[in-house]
Image (cartoon, rainbow, N blue to C red; front, top):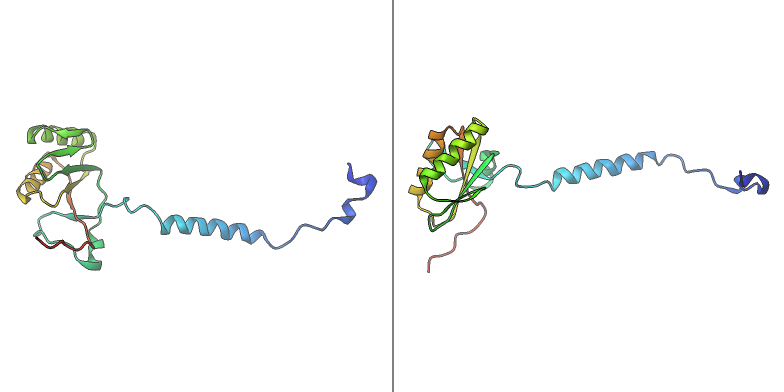
Length: 152
């Protein structure tokens, strides 16, 4: 080796001992921050519309109704219905889309995202069509913690 003729090894400091735990602390902190700042979209904030009467969640209890939805349908204020494939022409085409999704993944969950101005009648027709198609759970997306704007 190159250090033997000049005896450089004797002048070197020994490697520090006892810092092996520091690497473990770094790994634990990284995992902790992944859990702490994880995606809020893993479970969709939704209200389950089952046999019980429709009640909006309030305050801290709103977290009890979190469900994971495999499929999402969006309804705009003007009555347009969107799926992951785009705009749906009408309820007939939406029922075909429901049948395709149920054939691919039976007993999956559906999340209905509706704008604030969508009539409850349209939302309920979509939810009823989804239940008749075979979705195990139909959820209605809601926003919590947002103050209602005064009518003016």
